[in-house]
Structure formats: structure tokens, C-alpha cells
Image (cartoon, rainbow, N blue to C red; front, side):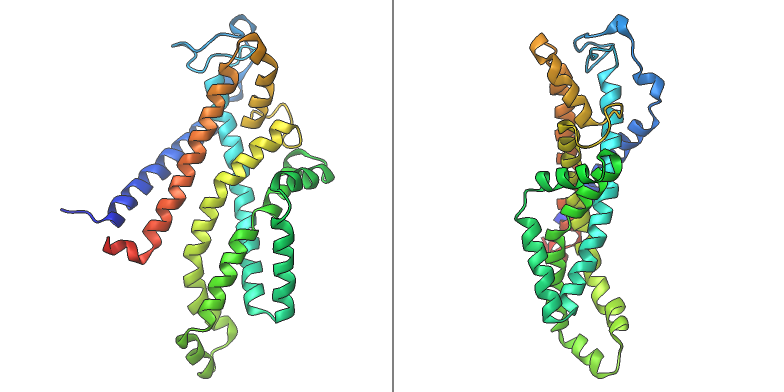
Length: 273
């Protein structure tokens, strides 16, 4: 049987999703005792016993990195979902509302896109007392703009379609048109935007925690692990920064690739390739 491009991408997408889910679940299932301190094995380089080595407190860096990735992914999932919901609500409001509402929303989007995300997240997180609450609020409040603009453009295009005009003339309500004509077209955009937003949220969580404005130091997040490693690079403990950092890059690239593949699967034109 000959597979077209869409079928091959679908199989690869399922494999990527399963791999990411496995890494996430492994991190969640690692008990706290497994990443406890063990001063007898402190500062050991990578070996068969400790593939990522150990840190200054003797903690297994591989287990701690996997657990930290699960923490970062949990924050990224929550923030991305909140941000994506904001994006679709704001995008629909801008396209379906009056010109004044549309202009005001576009002005807010331009304003937020003109401020660097990292700076804005730090300001929001700091004003809310840092920690998980401030970090979630900061990421969720800064990542919806691009998707909202995309949703707005999609709704504006759909509103001019003949079948929607006909539905209005037949007496269909705005809610009926929204559920039967607009939502089915917006769901694919929403899903792809949500997945592509996910790696950005993870990277911002790691960077803000690295700078000390995110998760508390006792939390085994990737940003915390990288921040702790900076103190020991001059002592030659390179593995404390390099290996967790590479793991973060790999998981971000995998999720980004997953989003691109989902876009290809959803795109109807890819079925003919």
C-alpha cells in the first residue's frame, strides 16, 4: 500500500505525541525520594550509573531533569490552554463586534506585541508575588496575541462567505451560525495554535525561573536546574548545564515538530500530495 504525504505525517505525528507523553509521564511518576540528596556521590560526571552525572548535592541529574521537564510541561500546558482560550474569544469579539471594538482590540494586540514577552512576564509575575500563580498569569497574558489575530482574520473571511449570508437571510441566529459554520473552521486553527504556543510557553517558563522570577528554588524545574548549574561551571561541572539544557531543546523541538505535523494533517490540500 502506497502512503501519501498526509498519511506518513499522521503516523509520524502519533509517534511524536506518544514519545512526548511517555517523557511527560516518566517525569510525573518519579518519586521525590529518587531525586533526594546524596553527598557521597556529589559532583560525579556522566557515567553508566548516572548518565547525566550528579549535581553538587549528589542528586541524579537525569531523574531530576525528567522531573523538571514534567513540571515545565505542566506549566506550559496550563498557560497555553488559558492563552489559547483568550485568543479565540478575543479574536471572535474583534471580528464579530463593532469597528470600535475591533479597533480597540487591535490596539491592545499591537501594544502587547510591541513589548518583549520576557519583560512583560517578569513585570506580571513580580506584581503577583512571583511563584506559580504569577508565572502562569504572565505567560497566559502574553502569548494569545498572534493566535487572536489569526482567528480574527479567519472569522472576517468566513463572514463574507455565501453560505453564511444565506443562513442569515433564512433567519438563522448569530449563535446558530457560530456553532454550525464558524466553530468547525476555527477548531483546527485553535488546535494548531495551541500546540505551537506550547514550546514558547515552556521556554519562557524556563527563562523566567532561571532569572529568579518564576517557580521557587525548591521546585525541580529546568530553569531552576540551569540557574543552579551556573555556580559550578567554573569548577568544571559542565554536565550540570549542558545536558539538562540539551534535554530542554530536544523536547521543545519535538513539540514544535508535532505542531507543524498537526497543521499538515489538518490541511486538506496535503491529502493530494
